[in-house]
Picture (spheres, rainbow, N blue to C red):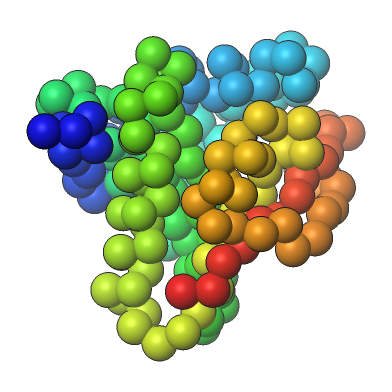
Length: 169
C-alpha cells in the first residue's frame, strides 16, 4: 500500500468551519511566513479563515474538501465555479508535517474528479499562486501552466502578487 492509498477526502459542511480554521492556522502561516509581512499574513488569515468567513464562502458556493491521512485531517481544497466553464481552486493547503506524503497531489486529483462529476463538458481549472511560493513548481508538475500574472488588491492596502495557473479538463 502506498502513501497515497492511505489518503481520503470528504466534502466539508458548515459544521467543519472550525476544523478548516484549525488546519489553516497550521498551513497558511507556514506557507507565507517568508513571503508576506506578519501584518499582511494576519490580515489575510482573518479575512479568509475566520470560521464565519469560511461559512460565508460555503454559502456563496465554495465547496471544501478535507483530506485525511490515516484518519487524521492533513489538508483541504476549496473549489468555486466562477463561470459556466471555469472553476477556481480558491485554496489548497497541506499541513507542513504531512507535506511529501502525496496529499497535495491527492487533493488536486480529487478536485479534478469533483469538477468532472458536476461538469462533464470541457472546462478550465485555475488557481492563484503567489509568485514567490515554492508550490509553483509542484503545480507545474501536476500539469498546470502559468497563464498570466496579476497584482490583486485585497484591502487594507495589501495585494496578492500571483500567477494564475490553469489546465484544461
